[in-house]
Length: 101
Image 1 (cartoon, rainbow, N blue to C red):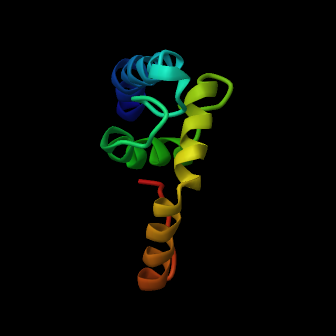
Image 2 (cartoon, rainbow, N blue to C red):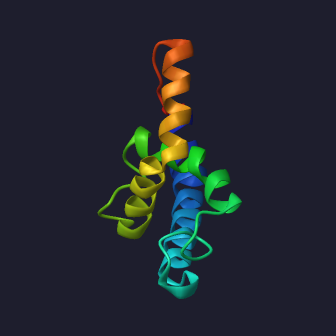
């Protein structure tokens, strides 16, 4: 019951606020770019990658139906060569990788 109250009164409203903000930011990305700050990958995108990929992996709150541009953005981040190399290195060292918190 406590977890349900925390989710409905704190988590869900905050997810809606923040994911909505990021969806709007992607709509107005400079130059029609696919990243938060324009056409090129920046530190802002790298910093946002982990929490967004983790949120997508958890399911429920961050869906393509609710946030289509954000879902497309996360897919693009996961296709970046640097991301793929980093994930490959984690798998090499740990044997597996999961973005789920």
